[in-house]
Length: 173
Image (cartoon, rainbow, N blue to C red; front, side, top):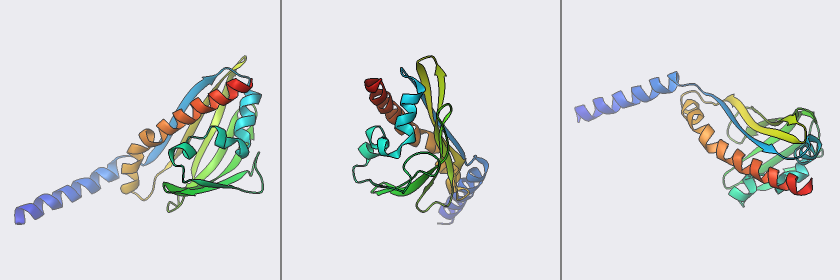
């Protein structure tokens, strides 16, 4: 029994020390090239009414219910959601047809505010759209372990959303 307790204690200490060493910062980014001018892409991204057409989240969790704020596009546009996979909210903080849309996002049960957005880089009638999310996961130690998983968990969703956005935009242009 004493050997078991020593091994268990050593594992707990190793878990805590490793959790303190690994970074808690996340920086998830995925990009896609869309054959359309930036103003058509911006129309889809800047208006939260358009997000259900290409957002991956509704397909991944059909129980998600979204609620839009009084402002649907531009700085101050707000959306909240809840479903079996969780709840959260986002608010547009910076909007530019040339550079993209940035938003602040938070999740229920997590006091951290994440900076996320979709940025544009144009080359003629081709536009590269990059979907990103950055922030520092909390609480310390547990958040550090979750930070290791975020690229895999969120990145695949960004790819699905960007592919759907490309499909929607290229049909309309």
